[in-house]
Length: 158
Image (cartoon, rainbow, N blue to C red; front, side):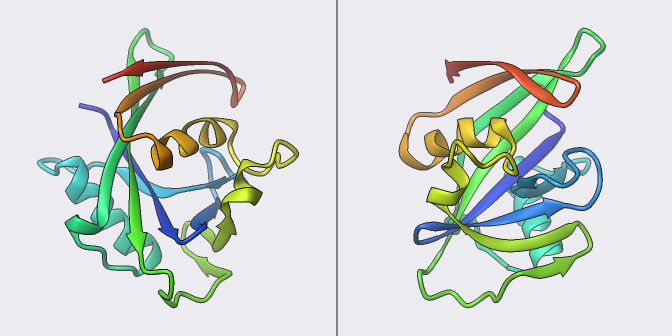
């Protein structure tokens, strides 16, 4: 079992993104999420994390498991996260930007997230998010990082 979950909440052509206040990925726009607690399923974990970090209560029917993202843990092992997309109605009201314990939450357009000139979004997020949104097949995204930067990415069907 992997250690983490990550979720991206979609409202039309926007995603709710978190600019992280602390490591890892401090200052980078990312999804919300965190560690699975003992006995928790990945779905239970992401619903809890979304509620804790945003105050948004989603139902299981509003989230979709999409991919896993894995990386070397630096000790000859692999760790990673289960990734989910949460859906809210296009008229869902959640004013941003808003500062929360984990950082700053803001709605960002997909165009802004995917821009090749945008260095504020994690390169791995720009790599796996389009696949999460537009491909119904589940994949493993195997990433290799060096000094906090992704240096390689491999994609494997699950």
